[in-house]
Length: 147
Length: 169
Image (cartoon, one colour):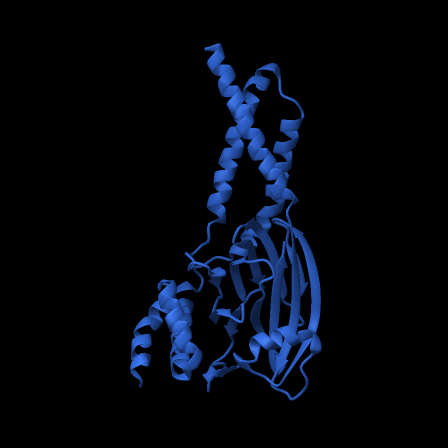
């Protein structure tokens, strides 16, 4: 009986240590999310050089005459940590990395009052969100996670 | 209407609802790339789906994010208390059973976390968007184009496919 108890305790300790060790690794995981807020507009104008990548991805999908970057932030987040950026409309964009796995980081994204989405995003993969009408165009929130 | 359009039109509902396999999605996506009519058809389906969702889900689906965000501080505090209790040193009886208890607690927490991390809706193989909710608005998701993902909230009727490209507003 005593031997059985010792063996069980040993096994439980090893299991607990392994799980806690894995948890420590997960807690240390950080995700950098580059968040860009752009405005695309019907009004004639230029394409902001800082938005060249966004333009390359959107120009064949949407009609617009000008595109400019309004804000760009690099959010360095631990898992379960929430990063926020305020849009010019006053609404908040919140990003929360929840898990990092082989297929990418699981991101919860909330555009206040407009959109909630969960995404599994590979390292460096850009996600462009046409979030909200603004002035004569639309605000585009681009997320690019790196981990 | 071309024969290929007729074939794709039969698949559009499944494509919109993410019910097609990888090959089916690839076929539809390839066709959509060169066919403005079918892109328009898909946009119409998306808009219709948005109207149906709006009718069905209004005042029913809770603000999940708000609930999760509100629970985070309490959850962090609970984890901190559990961690401190574990690190403060158990009694002699506790020394015997604490590892098993900790392992069981961690296992339960891990299982709960795994369940919690499951997407709300099944995602297609390789897809980026796992679940999406936009109250009172239609959303178009374009995946796999230019190695990026586009999520587009359609604000009004004017924002529709026109001649192969969408007006942005």
